[in-house]
Figure 1 (cartoon, one colour):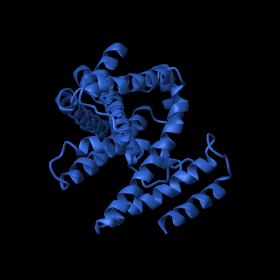
Figure 2 (cartoon, rainbow, N blue to C red):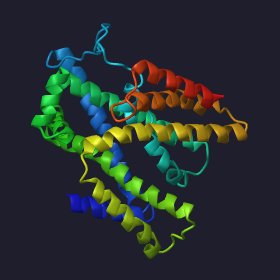
Figure 3 (cartoon, rainbow, N blue to C red):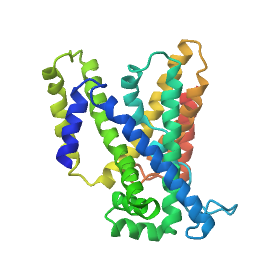
Length: 299
């Protein structure tokens, strides 16, 4: 499967976007939506027939004591809330739309849908396994997140539904990888004025990129993910400021991007100041620094 996926990555990276990506993305997208709707429906039915308990169906405060919501929540839910990683792919997608007005449906729509999918998976996992300690033991028992996804899908949707659900979940990292390599190739080519008309010129950039990608698979993913979560949201913050300046210069409503830019500036700086992989400052000091930086950026 690794060989098949990397072969697909190579084709998706060097061939025109409508040759491979444009053909299979509708299938991945349909699977993803089926998974979300099917699991959400099964969870709600399970709650009302007593086979599962949805803790969200209460007005009680269920937040764990001693755990800070700000800023950690907004970096933990890294792609479901706001994604700088997706912003690196937006120039590629922007070349595929006919007019600027379509961008709201394409970009805002995609992020809203992914946010809903992220919330559904959070809710389903908690309802299915219950307490956080059980979830952690399930991760160990089933061999990580992919094993948990497969188990929940089979139990709630049956064998056919599970295949589509797992396909939908597998589609997420695969479609992140192909567009990541492709957008990286285009970014490097644009930055260094490298012509990309021939396959040979594309492979000159793609081969070193794949070498780096393969090397990353030998590093503990948990370590990569921690830094990725913060870097992802930091990139989102930078792109929000960039978009704000573009809108300001074109005399359009820049607050639609400036408001989240201010908030994410506070989040990213507060996080890195106090996180274990950051500067490890006390939470109050880290949060104060984050807010001050956000105010300075806004001014």
